[in-house]
Image (cartoon, rainbow, N blue to C red; front, side):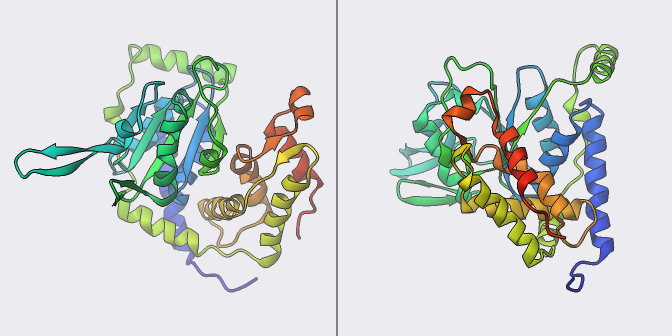
Length: 324
């Protein structure tokens, strides 16, 4: 193992702030611990997240609360079938005072952008997100406008209701670091949720959520994550996983090279969040399914069998030799 790059005490600071954020979210959200871990990791890793779940599991509320714990601007965009690209990005307006066109920025110009029901808008509107999600900028009338850092998109979608929805393009899906699935709470969690909401008169006061993570601290933590060490054989394990998705008979479209880079980024972030200066194979296995489940297409046979991308990926992971 190469020499340690990061003092342990610095990683302790990251662990402490992660614990504080989880505690703050836990005051309102009951359960969903795994999803919360991945959402916090996405902020540190500078990656966008697609959150999928049936109505009523608090997808939007969770994204709002996490955004509130960060000292940054927040915007919410409700996607609808009649939404136009200019409604998101902004538009040029003629100023009569100086006889010039001025660009009025749209709601995408924020730090944390929550897009509700992202699959409700057609391809033309979806395409408006390609540049801004990948390059953190938009181009309008031949001029580029940079987004302020941090810039993150949290998008929600309902996997059950398909009427009036549009399948997200593969190129757009590939720009999300994670696709997370929010499931129903356990019986005990739902009982606790009912009792907690009853004592609060069925209201949620987001004004009580504390800002815990400053932009400057976030930049510092991101620098730490970049310095997390990954050995060559561990990097080879990542490439083996990606290659296996391309060679599997159960998959018609395997993961792209962008997926390899996303796996590295996510694994390094989880290593740092757990106080380690290096990536382990377990870190990679932890993040593999959320990083890859939206980046592959299953074969028609597998889809007819009722298989999911997650189940196929778990099967692929079981067959790959883990480096020691």
